[in-house]
Amino acid sequence: MMIQTSKPGSSSACQLAFSATSVALCLAMTIDAMARVPDSEQDYNTRWRTLPQRNTVRPVDPNVYVYNARFERNFKMPHEWMSDRLRHVDAVAWRVVPDYGSCRWDDERLGCERVALRCEIDLYFDHGDHGLPWHVDAPEFWDSNYWSSSYFLSKALRKTGGTTAMKQSSLPAQPFVGPADGKPMVWSRLSSGPGNDVRPMALLSYDRSALASTARVSLAGPCDDPPAALVLAPDGEAMAGMDRHFLMITLPGSWQERVAHALHEAAAAAKPAAAATSNK
Image (cartoon, rainbow, N blue to C red; front, side):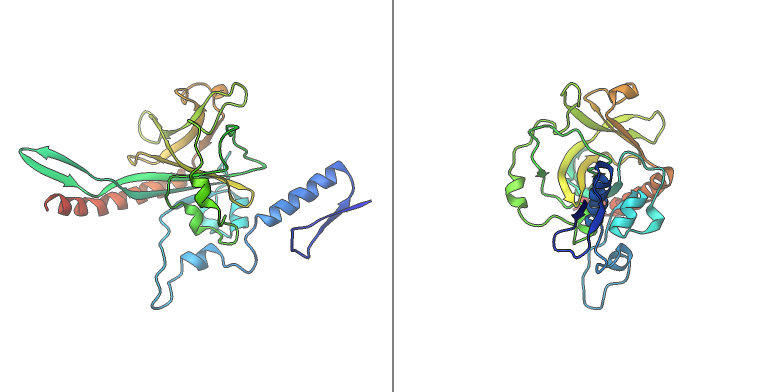
């Protein structure tokens, strides 16, 4: 007996002998094919790293990426940002973004800093290899009205439509829970600086199907140094033994160097602007 599994609307098919192993392999091949950027779509370098045409405006991608070989292949990403040392996650995208400023009195004079920075990070998890422990009541999509790195990935694989209603979904206190005990788990970052300080990361957004077969989790945290690792663990136990972690994502040194360079550039650009606005 033969089985045929094909992508809806596609003429290509996966035909294998009927057995549990071959059916599983067939389905895995079909899902992987559906998760790839179509051949007709340009690669990342062509879309975002070439000069725009005359009289056109194009956003500049602020993200510092690292990803595995599958993500590079499926999303037509540059090979230079691929790392075979990345584990437990398919891709990481980090960026510096403007944040709310602040005002304070100093020697009878009010000074306002209108140019502040915060750092955001997007994590991409393949449903098959890197599943996450979602709370049973966590909605499919929760967004705090911000722009993620998904915009710069494949247009064909991005989710479209229906997000307005999803944004109004209520969010559990923590959408991630321990698989065994059901206790809430939170994200933290381990500093790359002396002491490997542990700092909490705020959940900005998530989409359990942001891209074909891929979930996105977006976090915000401090900008003092590049993170050395990201940890999902019970609240207050990020530094506990590995048996208490659901996962630890160790970030490659080459990626940390690129993040450090981006931090230096962002801080240098912000200082003159902050000085100008505080004197107004």
